[in-house]
Image 1 (cartoon, rainbow, N blue to C red):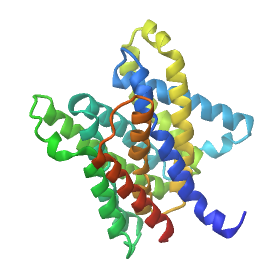
Image 2: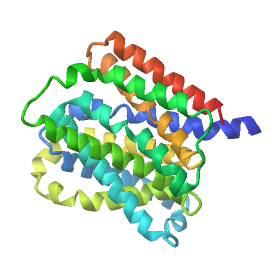
Image 3: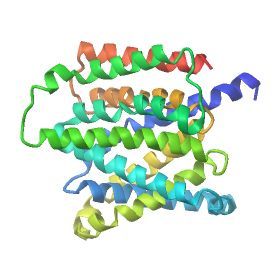
Image 4: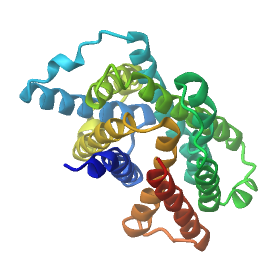
Length: 289
């Protein structure tokens, strides 16, 4: 592999993982009669099994041994659980548009936190991609229309959405902080396993018949998203946190593609322009380092 290919590999991994993450909406559309916590539990459970079996077959279980910064592994799992619960809850109370808008305020938080926590200096070319990315999210979600909604649950959805964006940003910073001590797959294992424990109570309250009815889609959901998480975490460990947070915005672009092609929802001009802005930002940051 050439030096240039090696340098581009982490960017392609983050982008590929984000594209696969974009299928989440398709899976959620097909899962019936299950709470957010139960869905997340199933996703984490099947994903954890996949990682364990893979490492067992490849004799890689030794890399899972927690030696350094154990508290931050716990923090990573907690942040992942919070992000998932808040994001899906925001969708439930305020709709997909608001949830996406607030989840992807994460690049703002990362740009504020990364320099002080990780010692990453702000790149001279980071402002334009960040501006393009945030503008793209705003175009996709059309906040002028969204904010007309004043239903009783709307404010609750806003709070959940803001929490998901903040926790997602903190997750990206934590992943970068642990990159020298744990591989991408080790981080995914602990992130998934710890999150699984937090989702146990709602899972236990779900009837077995409901799990059985959704078993096939839950299994595919868990395996697909865990694969995305492994390559995403491996990639983001090799680039600056601020860059990774902007590349992660490829996910809503991917989600919109699957939403339009598979779920047959309409595509708006503003949404198309927003996708162009986000992809342009991703291209700039991948070429600018």
